[in-house]
Image (tube, rainbow, N blue to C red; front, side):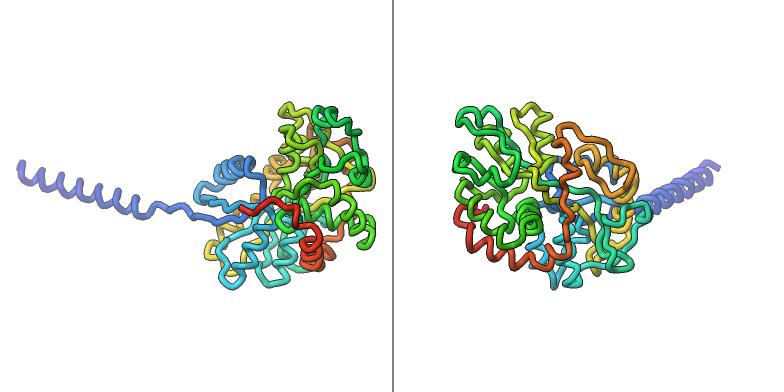
Length: 347
């Protein structure tokens, strides 16, 4: 009797182990989603946590660099793409890559709730979709400026005055999307010939060109330089952190670009890439974007952001993204020939 009982117990135990084994082997492994991005590094953890909280079966693996460097990396990988999705890169860069057949179209769930200026209207389904705008600004350290008796600049033209010589830094447009949106917006505001004349005069006052769009504002905030041409998010964040800076939207108007996403053609993780795309146009994501940025792609979401320059939204130019993308290589090559001698060494 005891022998029979032990045999039955052994059978039940073995069956239980078999079920447990099936459960373990059948448990769905997380999908690693390789995401190329130019989003500011101090925001990435926040976005990863929020998305993976809603989609726990996906693990975002970021590859991050400045816009120009990331765009060059993507172009270099054109014949053997590695990323699953490009997320938070300039719309002008995505248009350029789209012309190379880099992406597959996808209309994320809820795209109809976005403003039509904020996603690809040329293709159906759209090749790229915008998330939020980053906007050019000038960061001005009032303490450092006082040491050199520098007046508060209110226009781009002011920055060419002799008093600012050696006191201004800006991003290299070949490395930085912020640098390129500056250059392309000056051309749209002034006309190309006048924009090159302006940049010739500005170059005289430039002490160095950085390879990061946020670096000029960070350096101004830390007191290393009085004037940094950067973008509003970084200026507002630095000022909110206690830096003695004014964040200025020059009177002529300011350039801007869209942080946008696009799914890479032939990705092996299409379902997960579409999950991130769907999440990225949700009201939840838009509210997170608006924590730091004043302009998001979904109307009715954005609330004012502390320490953004007053009136900056009205100063955003009517940016021709298609023109900027089409002419980018020509503009960057000429800029490199004229001004690159003052650029920081590349790491």
